[in-house]
Amino acid sequence: MRKLHFIIEKGVYCSWCVDLIKNTLNQHFALKKVEVDVMSKKIDLVTYKEISPKSIIVFLKKRGYHLVLQP
Image (cartoon, rainbow, N blue to C red; front, side):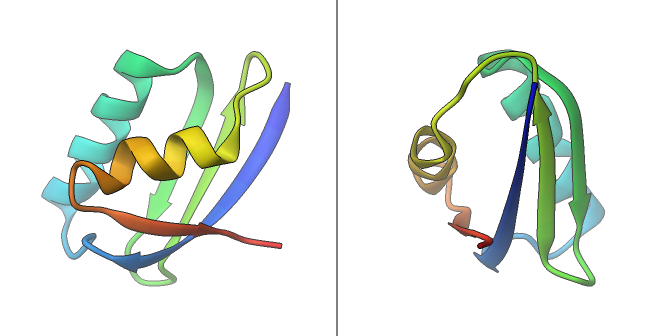
């Protein structure tokens, strides 16, 4: 398992966006946990297997969500 933390730069403004991101990520990646916090502009993921953070960033960018990996 791996924990990934992202900062939302643009595109996530409401609970509908949160649900869409969660559903989309769960359909395309092997994720154990997805937490999206609109107020703090953070996304925290726990993966079942090794996933490149860049692949998640690129995947969501194509859908209008702009993230950066939190150091």
